[in-house]
Length: 404
Ligand SMILES: Cc1cc2nc3c(=O)[nH]c(=O)nc-3n(C[C@H](O)[C@H](O)[C@H](O)COP(=O)(O)O)c2cc1C
Image 1 (cartoon, rainbow, N blue to C red):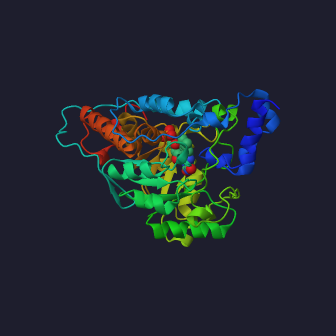
Image 2: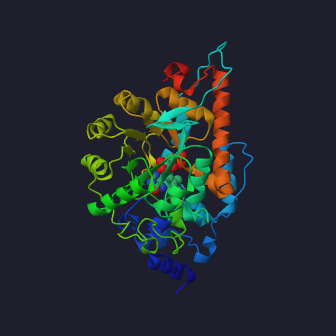
Image 3: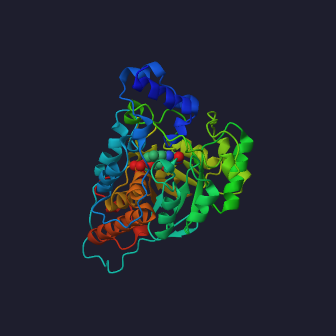
C-alpha cells in the first residue's frame, strides 16, 4: 500500500475529522466526499506534517489585519491553515470583501470631532468598540491553549466573546478565561435533552445569551483542506461533550430539522436571550422575531459554508429594515478594517463580528495578539470617524455613505 493511501486510511480511521476541522457539520455531512473521490485528486498530507499549533504569546505591531494572515500562514502547517479557508472556489469569501466597496463613505467637514466615542451597548453590555469575537470552532487546531487565549484577549479589549459549541475547551474553562461579557453559540443536537443541558450549563457558567447558528447544516470545508485529505489532530475533541471534562453526548449528531420553533425552545430551556446567526432573508428574520429572537446576526459564515451566496454586507440593509430597530443587528463576514465597521454601522448594524481576524491574532500572538487586533480596529475606526466628521459611532447612519 502506498504512503498516501495509508495516510488517507489513518485519517478516516481516526474519525472526528469534522470537529478537528473547526467543524460545524455532522460527521455524515463531513464525509460527503467518498474515499474514491478524495483519492482521485489529492496530495495527501502525512499526519506528522500536520505540525503543531501556535504557542505564541506577544503583542503585535499591526500594519493591517490582512497582513496578520500572512504571519499566521508562516506559523501553521498548510493543513492547519487550510482549516480556515473558504469553501468552494471562494467566490462568496472574496465577495465578502469586494462588496464593502459598494458603499463608499461620504465625509462631512467642519464638524466638531474633538471627542471621538466608539462606545456602544449590545443587549445590555457596554462595549468600548462595536466589535465582538465570532464563535469559531476547534481553536485547538490553531493555538496550544485552544479557545482560552482568544477569550482572554477579547476580554482584555473589554469586548464580548462568543464561545463556539464546537470548542475544544469546555465552555466553563472559556467562561473563566475572559473578563468580558460572553455568549454561548449552539449547534443543535438531535437529542433535545442535550440541547437543554448545554444551554443550562451555559447559563450556569455565566454566558448571558445563546446564539443559534442556522447556516451550517451542510459541507463546510475548504477545497485546500479536502485536497490535503482532511488532516487532523486526533487528540482534539468536542470540549463540551468529552467525558474527560465531565461531558457526554455526541456533538456530531446534529439536528437538521431546525425550525423557527427551536428559538422558542432555546429561550425557554435557557432562560436567556437567543440570537439567530446566519439568517439573511427578510422573511426568515420576520419569523425569527416572531419566535422571540433577541438579535439578528447577518452572516454567511465567512464564506465557509455555502459558496455562491451574496456578501453579508450586501444583505445588511434589507435585514436592518426588516428588524426596524426592535432588536440589535450584528454583521460579520469580511470585516477587516475600521472603514468596514464604519460602513456596517452606517447601514444600521449595532456591531460587527470578527472571525478570522481574531484567529490570526490568536495564532500570531495568543491573547495579546487578539488584544492587538482590537487595538488596531479601534485605531482605524477612530481615524475613520475623525476624517469623516462623525464623533459618535451611535450617530452613524446612511447619510454617512455616498451610496446605499
Ligand atoms: C475556522 C472557522 C471556524 C468557524 N466555526 C464556527 C462555529 O463553530 N460556529 C459558528 O457559528 N460559526 C463559525 N464560524 C463562522 C464565524 O462565526 C463567522 O461567521 C465568520 O468567521 C465571519 O467571517 P470572517 O472570518 O470573514 O470574519 C467559523 C469560521 C471559521 C473561519
